[in-house]
Image (cartoon, rainbow, N blue to C red; front, side, top):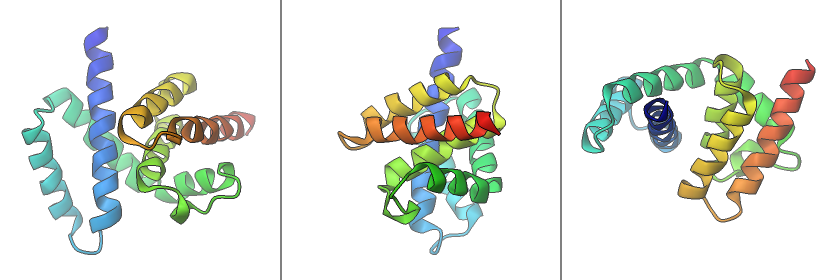
Length: 144
């Protein structure tokens, strides 16, 4: 079981880095070029085949569901415009909301993973912000 958790975590971290990259470079590179850069990133950081496969799945789902994901985040992040949320936080929220929408993982697992990743990659106050926004998204999704 530990290998599965480790693989999913690596995939989530890689996906976060792709989404972050895409946020800043989408006007300069085509999707194919960004995916090529992502492949080099995976090679460089020795992200295994299973993690890479799941990461590519998450990337595709995040892109396909971008509008509803951003809408849910915008509704849950009270007093925050999406464009004003820090890039790492914004893309981590996108990833987690995507998993809540398409993946079979329990919401609390998705939220805990996002908070743990925020502790590693984001600002000091980001884990509590990410937790609060994702809890509000979870409540809205499950109330519907």
